[in-house]
Image 1 (cartoon, rainbow, N blue to C red):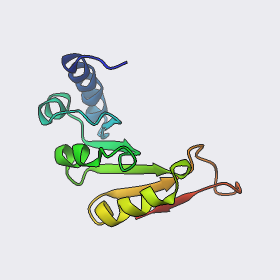
Image 2: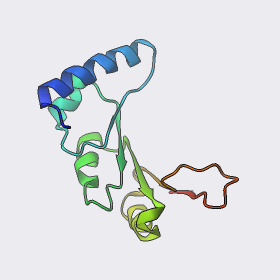
Image 3: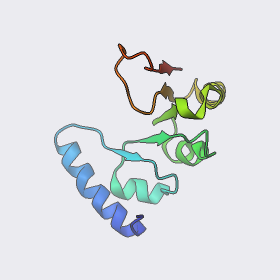
Image 4: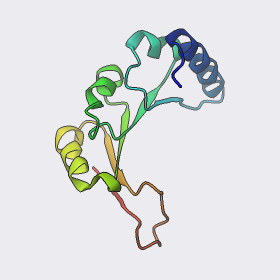
Amino acid sequence: MRCRDDECAAAGGCCCRQAHAHHLAFTQKNLAGVTSRERERAGFDFAVAEECQVYSECRAYTSIYGRHVIEIEYDDNGIRAFGRACNLRGDAISVVFRDRQLRRPSHRQYEYAAC
């Protein structure tokens, strides 16, 4: 369910103020449509963008957050999306490749890479 923009900004702002009061950063996650005004109003420090390469949404995040984006691509979409993301943005933002189940390194299906 998507909340109205003013509701999101108000709720995000409340959470951000609490985080900032404890010297913590606060993130916006997986909502590519956030505007600069909404980001400023809420006080988000950075964005986590899951599968933005797969869904062609990465520019929506980087245009608002600049270098303050963590992109996560998952193994069940294949390694190509991660490789493309690294080629396009790996020198500007953090790009991570993970298994969707977030397995431990000792698990045989553990996947992790970063660029």
